[in-house]
Image (cartoon, rainbow, N blue to C red; front, side, top):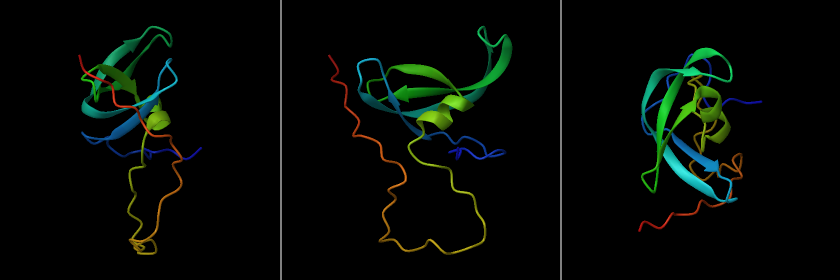
Length: 105
């Protein structure tokens, strides 16, 4: 599995995710803070987590694993090669359905 966040890379503020919820819709969010440390009761250990805010202002904590799972795009790793500089190329690697905007009341 290709990781959106390569080992050793920092997760930037603004890193975008699109998560599938129980209502079977995808919702857009972005990292607003982190990493912080939280205790995971299921794994019985402390883990790094990042705060994600969705378009409807709801927030939740993501582990690095969850950020990789729901990432919209990968963090580019600089290799020194300029092979992929064609701006006309379309990145079809992330075939993700359109997200649904949540209506605020």
